[in-house]
Length: 337
Ligand code: ADP
Ligand code: MG
Image (cartoon, rainbow, N blue to C red; front, side):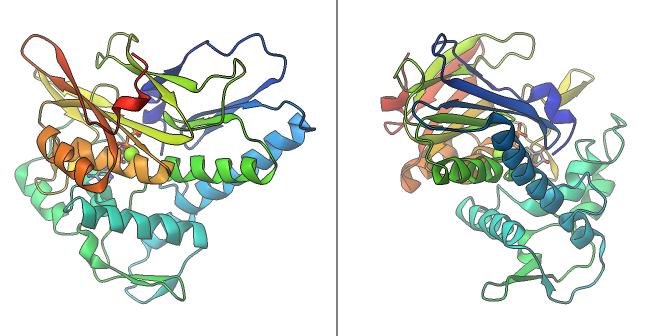
């Protein structure tokens, strides 16, 4: 959750389809090392924009203070820094995200793993300074020993977690933005708003309709680091959407592209033909984590897992001549073109 996201964050762009309507309220700012944008069609609802923004920023600040690895005294940083293997009590927010992260690890056969934090750092995509040095196999192996979601234990009834290895460190960057999107959506629901789009760093939820009384329309970008061209348009009908890709947050050395998504098995950035994945599910947290898991798993495994889980999946796959689009039958109804 940090400045690197500023470079990549918008894997999606909002169509200018909902324009002239006077009741379209937009609230935006920076958060979690990236930006957020909320659009609300607030017909017939009395609201105070300043109070609304203040409430939203309070929710975001609380989540960031719980889950950021860039804030030294965040709850997560304190858990990461302690060498204690005793049970520790954590906040409801943090518990929910960690528990869901582990659930996705199990579902994805370890492709998604919130304990990859030290490897993310080693490759220059975490809070440590970015050196562009390619780590040696020995370095990777010695750090990899201190990863693995099985090193975390839970006590659900008391919201306790414990680590069996004092050196493991958690990284929630692949799931926390989705959680924050869900929390903002819950807040808006609770205040009677029925038509809104919430976006944080490219993870979204669209509810109801836009100001033109159509579904919220989102463009999936072509997987090209040098351009911002729309490849496909999705109508977000009361659903969350998350996109992960290897073409925004990466570095290149000697002609090789190193992405910020780490394969927990090799301890190295992913190296397959999948350029981007987009996932639609009811919860943005679920979609966010699954999109990262699918990026690690590659096209074939992802397609079969998405079908097995009943999840709508869209992929852009690198080919010799460019990119191929592939999506499952669950995604098709949401594709506008
Ligand atoms: P984005 O930030 O572009 O939305 P993701 O949601 O895919 O991208 O999250 C990528 C981030 O997740 C990385 O920057 C890293 O901090 C973390 N990460 C990298 N590999 C994994 C992995 N295998 N499992 C869980 N988190 C990961
Ligand atoms: Mg993610």
